Amino acid sequence: MKEESTSIGKVQSVDTGNVTVLISDENILNSVQVNQIILIRSTKTGEKIIGLISKILRKAISDKIEGEYEPEQIIENVIRVNLVGTLIKKVGVEKNIFKRTLNTVPSIDADCFLLQGKELSEFMTTISSNTENPLRVGTYTISEESQANLDGNKFFQRHATIVGGTGSGKSWTVATILEKSTALKSVNGVLFDLHGEYKPLEKLDNTQLLKIAGPSDDGRTPNTIFLPYWLLSYEEIESLLLDRSDTNAPNQSRKLFDSIISAKKAVLENLGKDEVLNNFTVESPIPYNLNDVLEDIEKEDTKMVPGARGDKQGPLFGKLTRFIQRLRSKQTDKRLNFLFSSDSELQNYEYFSQLMKNLLDFGNNKGIKIIDFSEVPSDILPLITGLIGRLIFSVQQWMEEDKRHPVAVFCDEAHLYIPSNIKGGYEEKGLQSFERIAKEGRKYGISLVVISQRPADVNKTVLSQCGNFVAMRLANPEDQNVIKRLFPDSLGGFADLLPILDVGEALIVGDASLLPSRVLIDKPKIQPKSATVDFWDEWDTNKKSTGITDAVEALRKQQK
Image: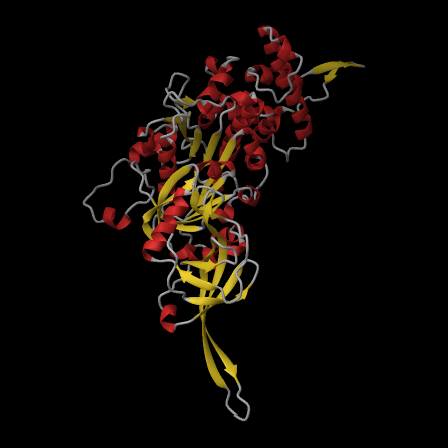
C-alpha cells in the first residue's frame, strides 16, 4: 500500500485496546463515520496499527483564564478508535500482511490516517487475499468492490453461529455457505431442515435430500430415514416411555432395563456375535424386538408366585400396567412411524451401518445431506435431533483416526431443540448431545453451525463454544444483548449496528475473519423456500377458498 499523504489527527490518549484521536481540522470530523478504518503510525518501522472508529465526539472544555470571571470554552473534536490488528509492510517475500495482534501500541501524538478510496480497496483486498482457505461470503459494505472471504478451515474448526431475525437474510446466508461448500469434492455436511425450507437446494451438485419418515412411509420409500427405537440410549428411551410422576416408575425402569438386556442378548446369541456379546451394554445399538420386551413385561405384570396358602401375586403384579399402556400407545402412534415401524428390514443387524452411511457418506454426489424434519412431532423433536447428533458423534469418535473425515452439522432453528431453558425429559437428553459436540466435537472432526432467529433462546453453553459469529439484523433487545456479550470487548459498540442492518447484511466476527466486518452476503444461485407470505398481495388477488376439506382429511390420516 502507498504511504499516506495527509494525517487527519494525532493520538491524544492510549488505553490497552483503544485510543483517542484529536482531529486537527473540523471539516475532517464531518467526513468520518463510525466503523471506518483508521491507520495509525507505529513505533516499529514497516508497520501500521489498524483500528475501527467506534465514536465521534465534540467536547467542550472549560478553561478559566486568571483575572476573568467567565471561563473560556475550548472545543475539542475527537474520535475513539478500537485497535484490531497490525498491517506489516513485508514479512519475508510476502508484502502487506495483516495480523490480528498488536506488536506495539501507538505513542502519543502518533499520526493517524483515514482509509478511503483506492487505499481502502487495496486494504480490503489485502484482507481477503491474506485468507489461506477462502470461503467467499459476499462483499464489504465499506468497499463493495472488495470480496469478503472467511477462512474455511477456521470457520468450521471453532464452530459457528448464524443469527438473524425473520426476513433478515439468515436462510439466504446458510444457502450461500452450503453452495460454496458443495464446490469441494469431498464436502461432508448434515443440515437439520425443520420446515422443508431448504428443499430447493437439492438441485445443487453434491447434495442429497433426505426425510425423516412420515406416518405413511415404509422401508421402500426412497431417501427416507427411519430411526428405530433400538438406536435410543437407555436414558432416551426412558424419557420417551416412562412417566416419572408414576409411583411405580422405579420398578418400571428396572424391569425395562432387564428386558432390553435380555432381548439384545438373545439377538446376539442367535447371530453368533460372540465378541459383541462379551462387551455389549444396554446402550449398545443392537436391534431387538419391542414385542418381545412387551411380552416379558406383561408376564411380570400378571405373574403369580407360590405362597404359603397357594399362589399369590408376584412382586411386580399390577405395577407395570400403566407403563404397558403407555408403551403400546407410543407403538401404535402413526406420527412415530419412524421410531416404531414394524418393517422387518429395520430389525437387521446391518441397518445401523446403512443409516450412518446415509448420514456420513461423502463423494458420490452426496456431500451435503439435507434432512427434512417437517413430519416429526414437535414435542419429541429435541429427542430426535439429539439422537442423530449423538449417533454422528459416536461413530466419528470410534472411527480410526486415519479414516475419520470431518463433518459439519448445520442446526437450523436451533432454539427449538438446543434451548436455553430446558424442562427435562426429551429436551434434556437431546441437549446433552449438542453440548458434547460443542465441547468435544472438534477433536473428532465434527463442526457445529448453530442457526437461529432467537439467539436469546439458544443454550448459552453451546453458543459460548462458538468462535465465529455471522450476525444479521436483530430487532429484539434480548437477542441483541446475547450477541453483544459474545462479541469481544475490544469491538466496543460494533454490535450496536445489529438493529439497523439491511436485508442480507451481516456483522462477521471471529477466528475465520481477519477483520471484524460488515458484509453484504452474496445472493445464492438457488434460494431457500421462504416462509414469508405476502399477506397484502395475496389478499388483493381474486381467489376462492379451496383445500380445507383435503387438509382436514390429511390431518385425520396424518398424511399429506
